[in-house]
Image 1 (cartoon, rainbow, N blue to C red):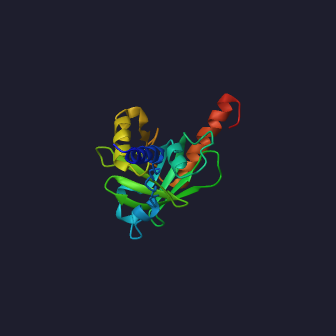
Image 2 (cartoon, helix red, strand yellow; image 1 turned 30 degrees about the vertical axis):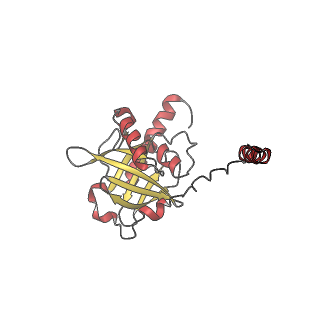
Image 3 (cartoon, one colour; image 1 turned 45 degrees about the vertical axis):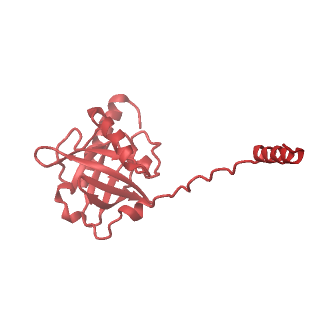
Length: 199
């Protein structure tokens, strides 16, 4: 082999070994607009009498957290007066010890799921009904880009009855929202008197 040919081969090898691979460009992350995806302008809560009315609902922290609302409150995991307001497509919540309501939009129902929204954030809530067809429990689901995988994980967790949140907690259906608030306030007052402290 000629010296010139050998030199050419060595030069090519050197250039090849020094060549840096181009960094692999990662796929751009596409943010899903869940409000646009699930919001149904034609949705009417009046079409679903089974999820209308007033209830006491247990443990709202999961919903508040997923909607970007503050959950730093001692009563957020307690029982709250809740009204499904069909005239306004609203879920109205009176947190115990507060003197004002929290309102969350109900933007859709698909199957056994309702979709709640606040400040353009969305959470999916699966409703469970008892043998009489009355709303009795609910599960909260996270919405993300891998919804099927997330649902599978959550469904497995939800087989544990301790993860369920109860509706009509500790009492039967209530006559109205004001009556519910009065009942909760009286219960808190009795608890304060018995414990000798304020909440």
